[in-house]
Every structure is written in structure tokens, then in C-alpha cells.
Image (cartoon, rainbow, N blue to C red; front, side):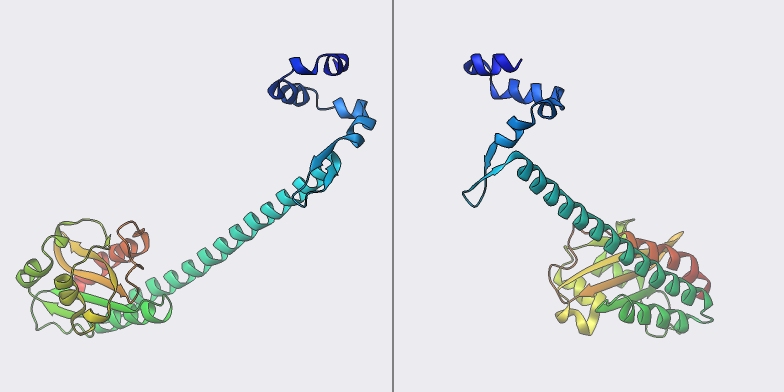
Length: 227
């Protein structure tokens, strides 16, 4: 085969050479002198041997694998932290004895643990309920302000207009750049949970809603007993 290389190099395409070397990976071990003679262009403009090139490729792959590993470890740490924060919140909600205590625990966790700029729980019903920091509104008022949002069974992010912002975040509406919300329901709709951020691009329509939906599901099971 080596004679064909030297005698008729014009008859061999790059693809044929690459295929041959891939199928005969011990070829250069049989011709070590040839391996030492091969040179490849380098970014610096200087030629380097094939061995040096292989070492360089392996070094780059090693750096890439380390970066991937570091990213995986960082994601694992972030997931552990998120789990711990979420566990503390759920336990605080379960331990609350009154509706104001429950709302206070939610607001405190969202603010201190999760760094959420603005949190609102709006409950639909009678003003006679002591809801602490949560706001009480009639369902009819909510339908006028955010009627189309109440039809969504999933948490939504992005696309919340000015009038909807004013209803959800009242005095803080002008400071909210982007928001997300989820409907609270247990058989019937009884409220909404909304969160806002000063950054207009923070909550986007494409952003995942897993966490907000999860907390909403917990509130769906805990809140009705207080209403």
C-alpha cells in the first residue's frame, strides 16, 4: 500500500487517504520515521510535527472536558441550593398557622432566598378575610383586568401589558420591567401569584415556568383551607 502512495499519489484522494488511516490506525507505528517527518502548519506560522499536533489536540480536548466538568459541577451546586431554598419555603408554608403567616413566609422567601424583586398574591373573594400582605379583589374586577390570563392553566411569562401590570403590582407597577404569573385554583379560580423583575428582559415568553408553576401547585393545596 505504501508503494501505491509513492508511485501514484495523484490517484489517491484526501478522502481515500483519511479512510485508509482510519482503518489502519497502527500504520504509523510500522513507519515511525515517516511519522517524525510529517509536519503540519501551526497558527504561529511555524510547522510542527504530527506528534506535536496530536499533543496539542489532546490538550485542547482536556481543557474542553475540564470546562464541561466545571459547568456540570456548578449546575449541580446551583440545583442543590435551589432545592434547599425550595425545601425551606415549602416547610415554612406547611408550618404556617394562619393565612397572614403563610403569605409572610412566601413573600420573605421570594425576596430573601430567591431575590425576586416584586411578589404579589391576589385572592378573589370577600374583603372580610384577613390575608396579611396578600390583596383581596373581586373575581369580576380580576376578569376585567386580566381576564385572558385567568384562562391559562399554566404559568405564563412575558407579554403582560401595562394595564395587567397595574392590576397585578399596583403601586410598584411602574417599576416592573417584566413579570410572570400563575393562576391559583382548586376546583374554582381563587387567586393569582405574580412575580416581577425590574429588568424588562428577565421574564420572557420563552422562559421556563417550572418553579413558579410548582409553587403555584403547592398554594393550590394549602390556601383553600384559609379562605
